[in-house]
Image (cartoon, rainbow, N blue to C red; front, side):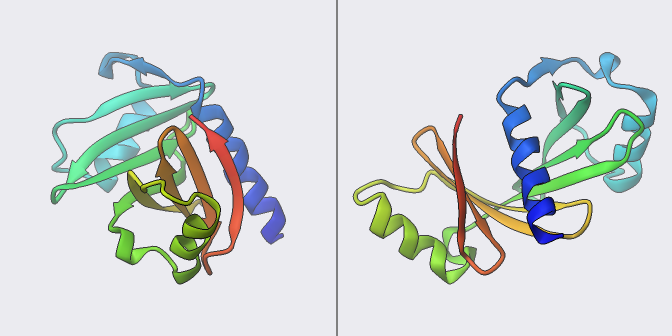
Length: 142
């Protein structure tokens, strides 16, 4: 079951590579309604279409957030930018050992619709994914 959830996260990330920016008027009403219920006071939202999914990117309390919805307005995943110190212990150790001299540009905590948490560390055009305990899952190029 856990492998299936990780595979789904990986598939969603693969679809991110073909995202297209869209205007608010092109987002289905169901998606906008679901977003407004979750984040009622959010004003500046950037929308992208990723195959059949819609991603809303926005700042909340000066922290970058994004939410991925299906066309019916169901949340598929949330992503919140985090500080490097908030990554699981094994993540920074893995990066130091396998990407010596490379600096982490940003980090995020990702939660899918089943509650499975993964972590992402971005290093110069490469996204590294880790499970909740800090174990390396995979590398994807942006």
